[in-house]
Amino acid sequence: MKPNKNYKELKESYLFSEIAKRVAKFSEENPEKQIIRMGIGDVTLPLCDAVVTAMKQASEDMGRAETFHGYGPEQGYDFLREKIKDYYAENGISLDFNEIFISDGAKSDVGNILDLFDKDNTVLIPDPVYPVYVDTNLMDGRKIVFLNANEANGFLPMPDYGVSADIIYLCSPNNPTGAVYDREQLKEWVDYAIKNEAVILFDAAYESFIDDKSLPRSIFEIKGAEKCAIEFCSLSKTAGFTGTRCGYTVVPSELEFDGFSLNKMWLRRQTTKFNGVSYVVQKGAEAVFTKEGRKQIKENIAYYRKNAEIITSTLDELNIWYTGGKNSPYVWMRCPDNMNSWEFFDKLLTEIGVVGTPGAGFGENGKEFFRLTAFSTNEKTAEAMDRLRTLF
Ligand code: MLT
Image 1 (spheres, rainbow, N blue to C red):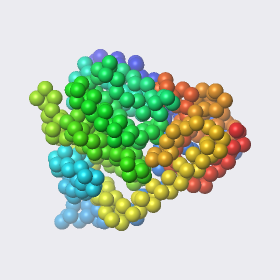
Image 2 (cartoon, rainbow, N blue to C red; image 1 turned 180 degrees about the horizontal axis):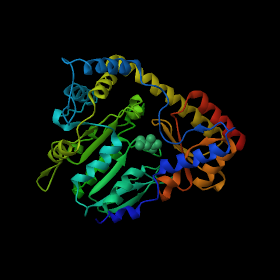
Image 3 (tube, rainbow, N blue to C red; image 1 turned 120 degrees about the vertical axis):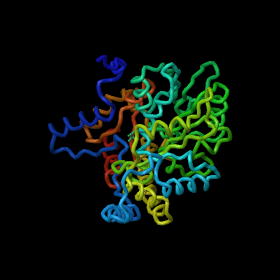
């Protein structure tokens, strides 16, 4: 057996596993320290009532012969896909039913979609970036070209026609920087992709945090995107599904390259390698899109927004540069006093017991930056910011 040698190109452990390891070690050595976790973007509020009620009912269904469900459709149940179709229609996006695929979350689909692409393709990835895009391509041995995101471009890099790429990753609202592309900027990306005959893999996992109506929540709000983009979405942050697992991916029927339909390929891939998301979870996901569910998740998002505001107002007060936090649950701050991001991580952990994510974990351009999430409780976020004030 010959192992996949591309794994040699990967860092020893995945970013968030590395952080968890360091924090666990510190906690063990300092059991008296109260740690506040604002590192991995994991939610703290429980599932909303509408979801819990639907999942209880679905569990009852599974216990009765007349309503029991065995294997479900690999692409997802119609009842959920209908709701997602309607959700897009509210934003003026008309999707065909067959373009919607239910998944167990954006992370898996973002990795699995690479099955559709030749290993010879060149991949364009902004730096800093969600490490999954880089690692999954390294595993396949694809050539990666990095695109500089920095303070000067507001961490929203734009296309460079001097660089040609086949696969382009965009994430907006961005993980880790919280920056959000506007319509004109996304239009430029769509034009560039069409000109290069490239595909855009658009990660919209944080779309529900967009408050500003002028900002696009989906790349399909941009004309021409149906010819060049695939969109990944998730209920993890929208509805607290990080442990429940459900998301959806939109692969337009118009996406054709060299006579190959990506929609048909993805269906073929999913029906072969995936048996769908459980009935109980999809029933819970359906409830997210009901009137009651929408109202309840909105309250939860407002709760996290309050945290983002607590963080950004503290940084304003301390005169520390940052992006995000406005239409995003992430705040991306410059490390004070010229510290690098791991130094700052260690300082916060050891001196004030606050955990964030060092920007270096998201790429070279993140080395002087640090990510804080708004997913903690209001009380802990306020406490973390009080502790930060004692340092600066
Ligand atoms: C993050 O903290 O970047 C996210 O929680 C990771 C993820 O969604 O997989």
